[in-house]
Image (cartoon, rainbow, N blue to C red; front, side, top):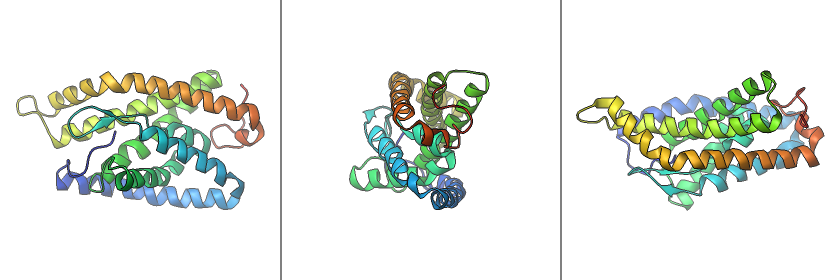
Length: 225
């Protein structure tokens, strides 16, 4: 989700920025160390960043002040680990805010937390759990990308409900309204993102399986499984 510029109260905008900041610092450190050890992965990282930029720019209008769209962060989280997608997500969201008027600078912290922190960590956790119980690669990738997308949507719903509680029902009623309206567009988008991510991973596994097996979440699991 991208919450539009100026939509969140100042305290919420600052709070989400502060919540995201440690993840950005940690992610930059992790990404620099990984690329220093394996500089040949820079091109693949660029592919993951471009995948996220393009998918998350395909927006559908949704709740007032926001929109629904795929996130694209699942692919990068599976290839490089969730921390790597935090600084990548920051760059993606910053460019979209400045060039596409998609999201905003005051809401950058909130959008970053939902799309580049929660989404990638959920995707990575789901992938590990799915592979741990023996789910085939395609199924694990689909679940990871799909549920990572849905986790982003739920986080944005929580952010908006917290900022704008319902006058009668409070936070819970507001959350039900935001999540319910988002679900109309986000559920099919999440399924579509899951399927598209499977296609991309299958292509990588077919043409570059050796490098894929060295990636953090695929190491020792067999990219062709």
